[in-house]
Image (cartoon, rainbow, N blue to C red; front, side):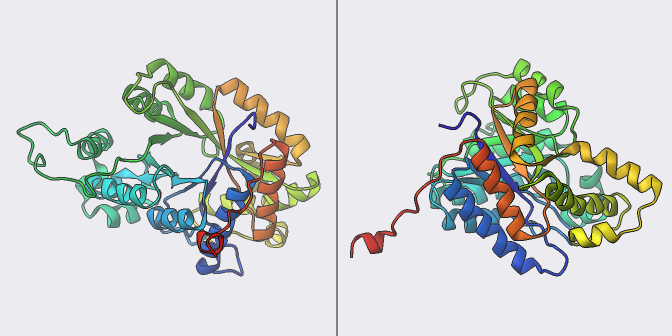
Length: 349
């Protein structure tokens, strides 16, 4: 068994010179590789109105990836609950669980995963956009899942279908201690987004463990640390690959999101001194280098914050380089490659 379970968070990045169709095909290619390499799980993020991200519908990607794999747990990282009716989320994930039993995760976030105007288009009212009703939506989701609305509740007679399928394991996502506290009180898993907030993991995870109350589905706290890693055969190559994420961050910060730029585009960009300082500060969110340099740094972070599992996201322009990054990390952390199973129809022949 590997000493540290590794998982993947995929945004299905669309690189310059490519298309969303290619990005989605690449996402399934990565899923097959992760399955073979021995990764624990693969989650898809929900983002909207971002030209360089193809994962706007994680519930569809989950089904496609689960069909392409045999062992990997596949889930959402996450479904942004304020964008969706809780009943629909329960029905999506019960259906996925019915199709791929024991292999689906439901990760839930409270952010919109987009800009304010797009969030308004998703939620259909300004009142819904400005109300802080995440905990109410979460309680409604759990009530649909468990069938335990109060007797006088108007939704008491509604049954989330399929009825005879459990909701997959629930995880709350966050980059602060708010979701950590809620996850602990509910007794569900917690995933901290270090790639968004590189400094708050220790406090949030500590709060989660302090607040944790055992539930029917989880006896003890379970923590995933999501972080950005860009790994290559040399430090110089890893640094070159990371320039794509540098320029992408800068464009997003200035309100000009676009396709993930190539390293050549990033290196040709005329950075101002202020922009270089912004990019330099942003690099704290990434671990960049070879397996030899990344492994001890990641192990130190894990030991310090007290996570049980690492979920890696990588903004790398070239698909082959991204696959190589995940392959190097699997080897560095001793993941056990899995044999490709023989299809049943061939085995019976």
